Length: 490
Image (cartoon, rainbow, N blue to C red; front, side, top):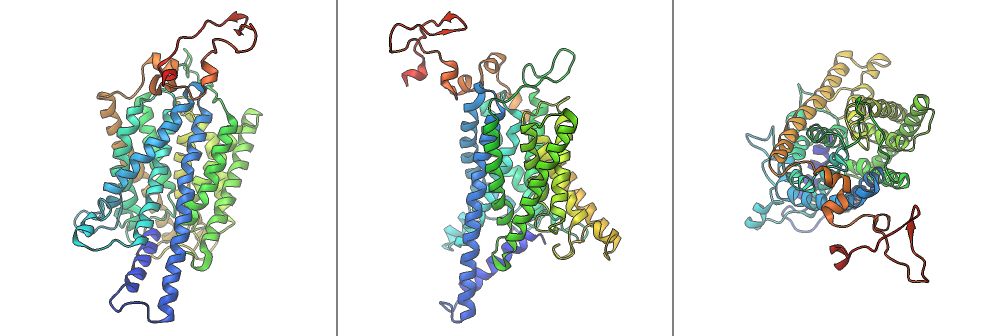
């Protein structure tokens, strides 16, 4: 049984006991249990807010790595995707990800659709703690979807966001989540569960793999590769916004990982959060060091991606590894993201490094649990990491078996998400189209898709100044009066 399923099941069992026939709590123990549940849900609520805040982090990160003519579309994309995935998760996704039983339960959940609409019809109230946990799961789904679009900046049709958000939130992500956290196939592989505490593979590898599927069909931005096939730099317009995005994501990650404990008992979330910080810091150091060795420049974007890679890398193991292992995992994730970005750029136009920071780091983080998983912390039935058979007293067969289970989770997640996402994007491409026209790409998605620039002053010349007879010029050439646009009339 996965750690998430165990925690949720325990909370629901506790609540069921409290509302059993017999009226109000009759003992001090029951009163304490009720207050403990309330405190747990307050912590989950706070963590949920932090995870939703990560949407702003993704928005600023993508806007900063975009050119000015594509800045505004990032705002619209975050709004519409968060709205769509909310309804998709409520209606279908939560039910598929959940703890349903029956003939299909190994593959998908079978109850909870329209958030237990069936219970409402029968007059059975859905408990408030269930609603809180449902909302927490929604926040994770929204993060995974946000990751997808980093590979598609500056050339994808907005309609593709809408279609894919529905399918991803209702079917693709929930199926992966169910397989690991909902009692599905990967929750018991030969008697061993996959250990992914907060989603290195479930959330991050899933989002990055879907982004790869989109990129394979979408192609590179115009001008990214020269006639000889060599990659050209297309700098983003604002490193300060990139930095702001990374910091917001970093803070939100404390809710992402810490909230995945679901409980406050023993303050175990503090251990998880400390591991998160250690790995993130080591990721920055690793990426900054390696990019300097390779380029003799302290690349700002790489430093930010190092933080993200460290965070992604520790996400699977934050509740399963000791403190000393967290910076090791983060440091190697920082190295990996630099290598990945430089390698992928030769053939794939991934503007913000999603394939490396979320994909490769997600793979590494999932496998790292099979290397560094502590005997003190692994879930029941799981084996500890290979490290403890080399330098400890754990049976090598058990640790190697757990590493194999972790590798299987990576392979299965990648294969399913790539095939499913590629199919959806291929249908979009064949119907409404996946990529904007060359003219629209040249103009920028802000004006071509939304009718308004993200930075109007940078693109719309002012016909006159109110004071004096000064004639504005640009490079010595007077600016002609500009016709009133439809957006100005609005």
